[in-house]
Amino acid sequence: MTTDTIAKPFHRILLTGAAGGLGRVLRERIGAWAEVVRLSDLRVESLGAARAGEEIVQCDLADKAAVLAMMDGVDVVLHFGGLSTEYAFEDIMQANILGTANLYEAVHKCGARRVVFASSNHAVGFYRTTDVIDADAPTRPDTFYGVSKCFGESLSRYYYDRLGIETVCVRIGSSFPEPQNLRMMTTYFSYDDLVELLRCSLFAPRVGHTIVFGQSDNPGSWWDNTKAAHLGFKARDSSTQFAHLFPASADYPPAGDVATTFQGGAFLLNGPQYK
Image 1 (cartoon, rainbow, N blue to C red):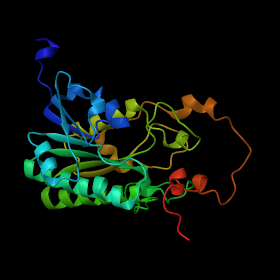
Image 2 (cartoon, rainbow, N blue to C red; image 1 turned 120 degrees about the horizontal axis):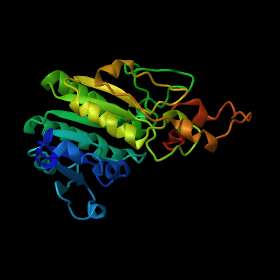
Image 3 (cartoon, one colour; image 1 turned 45 degrees about the vertical axis):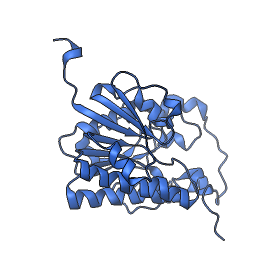
């Protein structure tokens, strides 16, 4: 039997946010998991034409009917759609809050088996960099964007408790080709490790409702993934390979520097500055 005739584990995977930064990375790497990968985004022009084994669907997540149609025939969902940085609350509400609510209702109605929700470390960004937290630590969002991720985590918990829909919430650290600043030496999450965590999240026999921190094997971690050990994920990469980019310095930041005091880093400077 050739590899071409071996059945793939899923018939159809939906990837929302397929035109985003991580969506474009995942498009190149998840084809082996399903016979059909359905790629969805509000703006699909940059995706080009569908390739073999792909479907492209334009969808506004705030449009409940469109989301329901998008979910037709889907087995599992990688939910990376919505706004990925801080915006005005009205924009966050439409894309991230209403959009996620519409998605979960469609998941329920269409009978999809599992969701992997792209949450964020900014759901807990107001913990200090001297803290080490696990999945049971109360959320402490640092922005409206972080608030929307807390909402998604709570909503997915509700759909699991009420309806048995399993979700893995991945609190993504900093997933880029390499760290862009010193903070990212702690939060770095390589593309390979991201894909491996998604694979574990989709293929673990049971996940219930799991919160896992998306990080590589970096020194000085703020996050304890012990309570997600059942996923079987083991990071293979580390930010240590980039240590030469940020040589040791004896220059300490000012005591009031929130970007180094809190885990959310510069995101704390992006939200409304209340007085």
